[in-house]
Image (cartoon, rainbow, N blue to C red):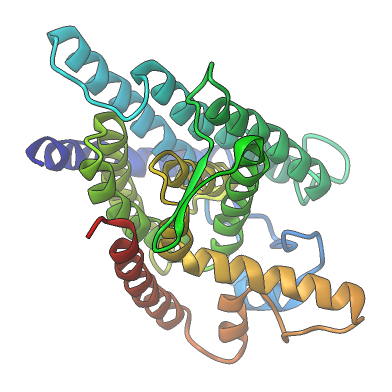
Length: 346
């Protein structure tokens, strides 16, 4: 526990020292939210969002890049030091394979998100205001998730093929684990991306999820995961200081895609898919509200809600942004407690 507290503090101090120069650098290269704000994940115009958030134009995006950089560098430094000194490193799976798939997910989805952010910001091609078209982004996400899920399933990887549902049973689903795991990864990558619409909302909810999964990783005596989550918590604490209302920087797609996919991977590695769904239930609800809105417009030819996702619905009803964020955080804490009760052994 002392090690985890130490790495958390080191990560927090490191990113705190780097964030202000990094924000200034983003301003210098004009890596900022553009005048027209956004479309939703399904490429439908969102005039309500634009009306409520137009004052945020010019705020730098890409904060997730710095979090990824700090966590990755510190993780490799700490793990290399322990290996160099001969200290025992316990892990649930073969150490090299576990570290590989963890950072492959963390970096691969981050690179995809960064490419999308760059296209949106610097217009690398014609019609690039909205970044990479969702159909292509979605396809690439599935390809990456399929590769990750295959590595989890096959014997040359981690040889995972079971789903543990508390109070029911452990189910050996065989090769069906691949589409299941890929779906979980893609779903959470997009769910976190959808939720990152208010200052501090996604970052705070992610922190709550990390704090919930830390004792689970410790219970499994998985040092790489524990160290990684500890560093991630420290970095996100430092980032959240500048991301709360009114935000000076946002995660960007580079952060939301990477963090959502990696959170899903941690749940899969620890065999806590049900716990993941409950601990991250606010992300699930946010994504579900957008999906239901899309399906309603497609098949019923009318909206189910005035606007989606859910946090935007409340904002359109007149709730102040900090109030929505704080109440979603409280709901996230309650969900994390329930998820831990189901995930931790009796």
